Image (cartoon, rainbow over all chains, first blue to last red; front, side, top):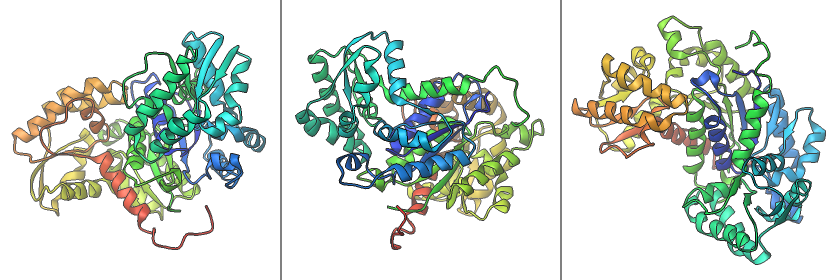
Length: 242
Length: 242
């Protein structure tokens, strides 16, 4: 039982947010409703396209992201998780605008690599074009000793980008084959594991046979980091508020 | 594209709320994130146990339900969906306390029966002891010409109640067999269809082979009613707010 309320800035996309809520629940040790973690999911799919913004062809998503953060603050949340990798490209602007801690999805992925026993070396990262261009994983994993390789431009155009769009259009099953193929190509180039660094990607990968190599599901990784945050105060006395 | 924001009063249980968000997404015609329905999920598993309250052995959940409604109002939501059948036993108190419309899950189930072509006659309803004792479905379906039969006390104690508790404890797979058996017993007594009138029940039923008779998934039914509400203003001019 915790009185920490998790804020989830979501809707990017909404299916990934729903899956985040599912994993947050299933990964929490619980015997009854009241053992689960209180959370508010701000699911706003209207956040302007993060890839277009990065390319300079669409509006800045930061104002709408901050609107969500204001809503989560007003709801009494104590920390924020964002089940969208690309949105982390705007994390400095978000952190500057709130006193709430924002759990970083790349740090959660690094923790998952360690948990799975994937030591320093070459790993693959699949993500949106913006996530890869901003170097979120290249920069975030360097200190842990991991060298990041990513799909090349042709693989992005043929496999990864269209598959992410399929998931956002509810065509999840169709996304499996191209995503599995892109991941396999990374292992063929030496990746010992593949980080599914866009929250649409684990949905597509899960829609077919499991890959025969280690993968990091960034939805699950962020859910585990969120549970750890919620449980940090578990030994404090319970407040009067139920 | 809609600017109507759906409020979801959830966490009862949290896995059912996550599934509601998943179905809300998958049932919405969409090509990209921005086509999906904005929503705020207030997932508060700390709401006091509705069955204990109904038996008079636990605190009244209404104050905590109203705290959630206040939060959804503050977030700018335009209507409220509650993916918990039992909580509808307190709907009069909730409706008296908010100007927002609350979409009724029993009305959504009736609409699903009609959509599936299940005309007047005997239907089965599975739910919590409190839902059945309060007559939510017996009263709510009578005007449509449906006669409701429900599991007897022994079936509730042996099959339905423990299975609902298994889902809330994340032991979804184990809940399938008892729930499927309870549903089958209703059809053996003449039910032409079975309403899964507790949002944990469709999760358990989905964890095994599909039943060989029509069922109404009240999570899906409420998601469809929510999408209908969100789309009602689709032909109005778009506002300037993205």
